[in-house]
Image 1: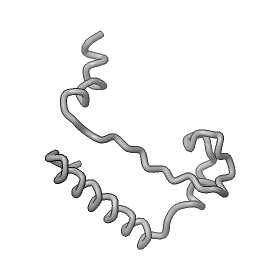
Image 2 (image 1 turned 90 degrees about the horizontal axis):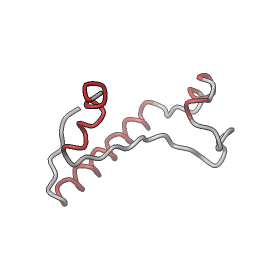
Image 3 (image 1 turned 180 degrees about the vertical axis):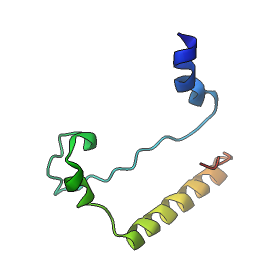
Amino acid sequence: MRSVSFPATRSSLWAHVHWNIIRRHGNDPLPEDSILTLDRKLIESYFLPGEELAQLKADIQRTLASLAKRDSFEIMPG
């Protein structure tokens, strides 16, 4: 049992942030459903354009780096 469950529990060994970033908007066609149950074409129709996605990614990375510095946490690459 331990060999099966250990990989899932390793993240408990160090402080970390796990954040699924899936934006849900007011015009979400199925707000009560999981994002995983939606049709792929419907999901792809809501993708951010490349430049906007790159800006969002940079903003998130900058914010996380700032919080890590404030709280003396090391950011692990990956």
